[in-house]
Amino acid sequence: MTLTVVILTKNEERHITRALASVSGIADRCVVVDSGSTDHTVELAVAHGAEVMKNPWVNYATQLNWGLDQLPHDTEWVLRLDADEIVTPELLTEITQKLRELGPQIEGVYVSRRMTFLRRPINWGGVFPVRVLRIFRYGKGRCENRWMDEHIQVEGATAEFDGEIIDDNLNSLSWWTEKHNSYASREVVDVLNLEYGFMPHETIANLQSGQQAGVKRWLKEKVYARLPGGLRAFVYFFYRYIVRLGFLDGSEGAAFHVLQGFWYRYLVDAKLFEVKKYMERTGSDVVTAIDHVLGIKVQ
Image 1 (cartoon, rainbow, N blue to C red):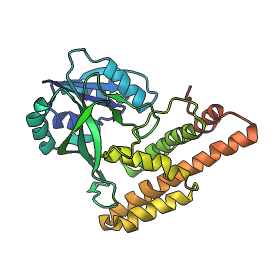
Image 2: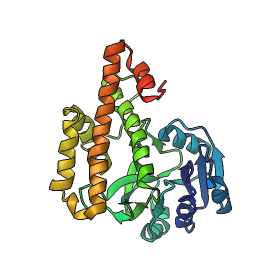
Image 3: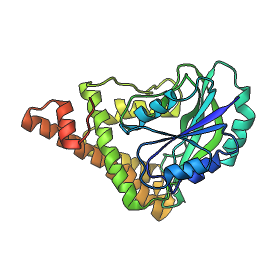
Image 4: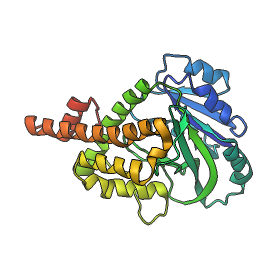
């Protein structure tokens, strides 16, 4: 049994050494797919034993699937890891002990993912831990074709590990808000695609699957997306911060739940409104409007 770890990077010199070190005990191969880093990311990755490939960025799904296509055919298992994430010792032990015992019918493995914000673990608000499929057999898993909130899909049976991956980003709050501004534009593309269908719609949404990610996606696409824009951001924040006790995460948690649970969601709705107003004003089709307003070329 061999395990290949795939990490996508751009200017991740603060994180890449830590990410690679966290999987050094289990990874037979580490592949870094870089999209034009101008810092020391590539040099640090090579120095710590990773193989570096370079490819221009389109979106996360396209980049990850491109990276998977470059792996040799004798690859057995793949672990998808973000550069600012670390694999906990408990998950390392579980992978070592259990992965080789999985039957051939198992194509993917779900693990838990938690995150910190301003260096504090976020434990309340009903957000974490989130169950994500991060380990999968080579050739069986692909990233769904989305611009935001993409997940790995497999067609076969899956297993459950208890161990965790921790998202612990060390960048500043200014970096975080700039990144989420970009995220909001990308999410608008997916929201508009639900309505206009200008590109293939791939989704893990499944209310009957019992998998947390599939149920959440179903609720997002079938319930949240049909609520009035703007108002739904208030409702979601109230649910997270009051009903699910997000206020117990302290000052750092308050910043997280306000910014990620309300500001970000409201920004998505505001950008969605902006694109639709542009379409009304100019008579443009949705793809042209996305290009002009958001600066994203989807076709």
